Length: 470
Image 1: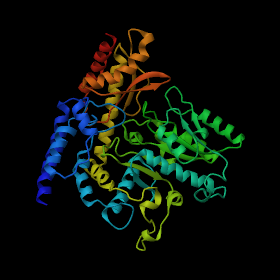
Image 2 (image 1 turned 180 degrees about the vertical axis):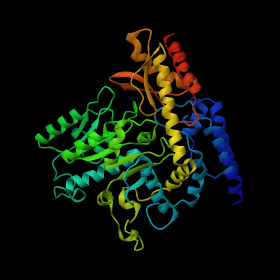
Image 3 (image 1 turned 180 degrees about the horizontal axis):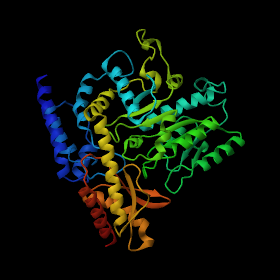
Image 4 (image 1 turned 135 degrees about the horizontal axis):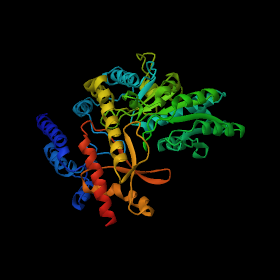
């Protein structure tokens, strides 16, 4: 244990030093060939090594090459820096190393609290047992869609767990053209098929068009198909748009559809100074996915799925073989009865610590600060003569384009700008496609980002564009 004591102190110093040095270093840097070879092509060691020498390798070969999301000028994808409280308790969760499938221990009991807190933060109605932590929104979506599939087929007297989909007419799913790709992956994985996934057009603000949604549902019903699931977004990845959740909830009610909300990134946007009106229908969802490892900064991996009725996921997943029978379990049973994971890590400690450290007030401040900075960036883009704002921000994502001196080359230029900015190392953003055209997008999540960082981002884009065009 003496070796572990010494190495643990060194590891804590390494982690703290790494985080402290981030703002003064590059956001991202390419990995040189020698270190790339070491990282990816190491032979299996024959003999073990002392813990301290492992830390030397981490210091010299791992920590110098981060993804970049710990830096205040990282604006790529939807990746937050780690919360200090989450970093602090991660080794303690590893030291306990429980499986949070079930049983009476701290990991399971604390997950009940963590899930309830997440529901309370976004105003989602919660009953005990009606939710669980997952690896992320991808798995949360699979859990929600499998639950809805069981519910929909059961209404017609078919048990999909026993008979599969063979006894059912094709089930159709609806999501907007801005919906996340995890929805399609889930549909394909669960045997529903992308052929029966309907992509609903969006309006000028990139929100789901409910008139088009109604039209597609009606057409599928007339064709003898079974509409059963509509997925709306509370904060899309491309623009942060919030679909008109209240209207979509009403369409789902009229047609007997399961109403799912993908709030992986944006559900916490309901806490903004002036939240988008679309959030009004969030509490009517049958299921909601949200990722504590996004806006909250809980170290990955940590997603969450919430349900209006806890019986749904248990009907879809519960399977208790004799060797897992727990006669002392309460009426809620085990977490493993509500999803596909049997061995489940102690994610709740990181969620609990992050929320406890920030408190509701701190979380509200974080959301309002980052959404405020997004509006500031949008105003800077709008006022500049060399950028075009593509849509007003409603969460903390800003979508825009660099105005090319040669309009016919604008798409190619905007496609090349992100990687050029990344390689310069002073800022990091990513690109996307909006309305068929290349676009730049910046997502503000870091609590220490400043207006000066936003100005540096725009200057870096300008410099990269000049380098590209010569």
